[in-house]
Amino acid sequence: SALLEIQDLKAKVRDEDVEILKGVNLTINKGEIHALMGPNGSGKSTLAHVIMGNPKYQITSGDILFEGQSILDLSTDERAKLGLFMSFQTPEEVEGIKMRQFLINSFRNIHKEDKITLLELNKVISQLSQNLDLNGEFLERYINTGFSGGEKKKSEILQMGFLKPKLSILDEIDSGLDIDALRIVAENINRVKTGNMGVLLITHYQRILNFVVPDYVHIYIDGKIVKTGSEELAKEIEENGYSTLEQEMGITI
Ligand code: ADP
Ligand code: MG
Ligand code: MG
Image (cartoon, rainbow, N blue to C red):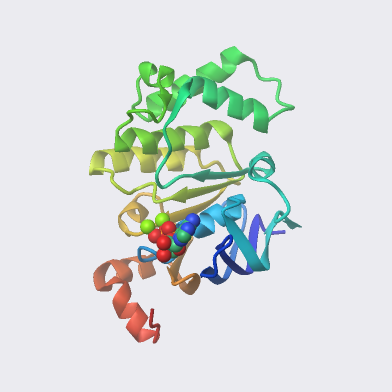
């Protein structure tokens, strides 16, 4: 079965009437990288949150299958244990918990059966941090607290590399990065994306796709996927903008 299969998914903000996801269909197989591109406010982050089970949102129809099983009844924590991971568009600052401790706690929570020692885990953390050009002191700081924009995004990729999810959902991991940080972030996405990992790369811009090459590009407008293609589609969007496509397809928002 597919890694992730989203079937005609509709969702709204809980206790409000406005529908945000308006019938999303998406299948991601093991090992595939899917880029999801769309204008601001189209509901990309909402889709990511709904896949992870954020209780702010309520599903009104459709289903989400992970490795063939519906995950709609599972909590976010249970979904993480199945192998789902999401990096936040705006990572939150958490005072009182240091990065290193957070990483180790999360790993132990998700990989309960794994007997890897603390020493080994710390070695892996050091290697991943080095690759991301993050110094050791970074790991002793509170989660995201006072981190620069680039450090926050790198810390998300550090988590992805360390937790080894089956599916990584990266929500605008490229936003706010200068070209050097973008390069490092992209290199490390490629490095930690092991053979079978699926990736849903949510982005507004084509730029990151020069470094992380997608198998499929989906254009997402007003709560659903309106067009699917290859890398070329992303380049067209970069040249012509979303509004040209909207006009072409007769979409009015
Ligand atoms: P994108 O990530 O594509 O920019 P979002 O998913 O963040 O889009 O938002 C899509 C729309 O849903 C926006 O109009 C936004 O204001 C609305 N929305 C998202 N989450 C909430 C929420 N928790 N409460 C109210 N409105 C929301
Ligand atoms: Mg946005
Ligand atoms: Mg967003």
